[in-house]
Length: 238
Image (cartoon, rainbow, N blue to C red):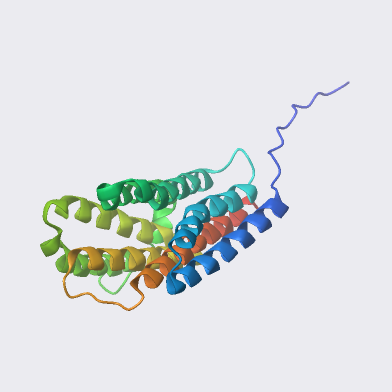
């Protein structure tokens, strides 16, 4: 008697050399960008900011197999929208701030969609009153930033509140992905919080504001990707 077996579909292999090269270049670009924030060459700041997210996305995709998991696909979408948020304002003229906020709002939506299946883990740690600790902590942070920024937001009040809610949702959900993603989410909140304070308050003054914003932003994105890859590898173990 003979038996037949159904052929198995082999997923596309990863490209570790490409992943390592892309990750290394992202680190170099990040370092050069932060030095440029201190020393002032505008062209170098723009160029390094524009290429950072594509390198990070390449590192993510080259480290994972196709067909890629929901978490990886939507994180890549978030990186793509973040790249548009970094790049499109350079040519948007007087509407550059609105264009930036719009694309980064969509990026937060993509990250929320990516992390949503892990929402149970993100809400597992509860405080003494039964509230999930990450959610309670970030709601306090959101309330403080809105109290500072909404009075100066004017016609942008609704987008500011919506963006803040999505940003906090992303950060809360990131705690259920991986500890590195949780740290990345926290730094993302800090980075965007500094931008909001600079845009909508009259009292905020921070030396080297651009350096503070971009260092927390770039590290946040790198940690989100590192956390996603950590979760992906754990799920991929036989």
